[in-house]
View 1: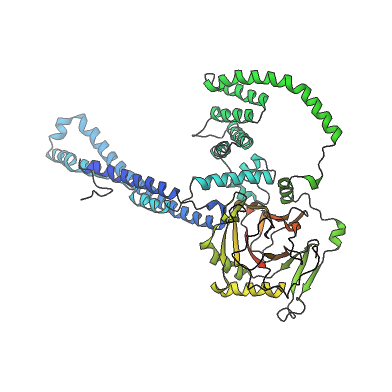
View 2: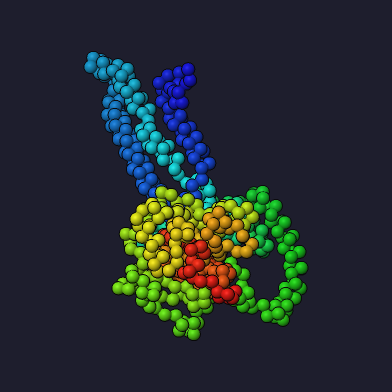
Length: 559
């Protein structure tokens, strides 16, 4: 016969209670290790992370119940001890006289035989059983180490994209954030240290330095930490600075470390090595620095925007910099009421159309989806959100990627009347056939959620990108914004220098292909990291098949 997982110890009831508690802890650790193998990518969707807040609230309620039960137990023990203390003081002044009274003798026998045993049982009563049971169940659905690392890396991505100081992030005072919200969003010394450790594990020494320096600064200001001290932080800082080639600064922090801990073995070794390397570097760099300065002067190294690496252009556009909206171009953009050539549905109530860009033409439609419709779409999508994927050009298969951090779900027209109604609205406004389009994709961006520069259409080096659909290439993109975003989260077009900002209830539309069927390289775009807020979008990718008589082909490549 198998022994139960949490069987009582054969050594007796006392040991049995302790074994019961140990079994719960072992079971908790087992479930934790089992659940950590199933990665949920919680950090990549704010919508799904909201469920974790309610889970944590329930656990907090359970924890408070456990604390209250423990306090009640201790209060009972305390009252019994106080009562016995008074009695003991009186009894021990004249023990024989005290026990000469038969009632006192009886009560002594009773206390030692019965009441102390009851007290023992009370002390050993495990009030945490209900709490641990609840925690064990909920732990299966907790984020894992990869989620924590993903969220940490997302903070650093926001730091770089929006050029934020570590002190700004640590204080919680992000752009668009109210003082009240910032007050409960501060990072502790331990939080900053953990961010630095994540960067260190990724060999990202720049962010290691920044976050360890922030942790040290907060320690210097008087903030306390039970987990980390200045010596440990300085050890990380000096090494990360050394890895970046800043020997003089690394030497400074190493000396500061040795002031706190003169016997630190590694720091003493580093001190001699850094001094030796610094002397060599100074001799070699003096002449090289002068020559490099002269070369820069002769070549005029100020880069034009057109030659900026795409990553920098993308980040600048996310910050609202580098936009190419000139007054002349602005004068060609208009707002109008649009009925799509007197479409029956929009003759009386045309939609509001606004030009966002002229070449390529990017238009925004205002108030084209209601709050109720957006909430229903979110409700349908939320249980099915999965980490968004991209086409791998090498394998032709879908895979997750670090440059696309969000979760998405696909909704077919048959699943709910609201989805069918939205699809029909897209067809009526664009004039394109949606029967060959892909299902409505709903996406929710998580911490630092983004999608780096990409094309929606399949390029010539990806001939099989949409072959399984049998509907041709993606001719156009329709993008609904289903939430406002307090900061960040713009859709930027890196080739043309355009930024389109989220506006709840609006939709943006553009063609990915010229009328000739050639891909329009100007439509390369990206979703900027969400700095503050919760970004929900849904998009419809329309395909070539079915559009033969709706958008006729042009004879020229540039049509």
